[in-house]
Length: 80
Image (cartoon, rainbow, N blue to C red; front, side, top):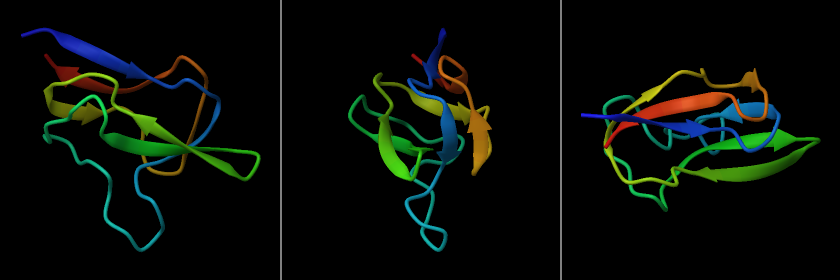
């Protein structure tokens, strides 16, 4: 098994759910498809959906909900 990385395209604040009272887009251990949204990045009060961009299983998040991130930082790893 190889692990593929999902990296942040933008700097900002990473959110794992669409609103504070909603369920997370994906949780550790979930399978993902390339088009699946795994989170949002807030940049200057604008929210950008972050797609997985890869198909795989057993996603492992390396960033917590509402944590600041930098462009290029690894958000999650996925088994290919």
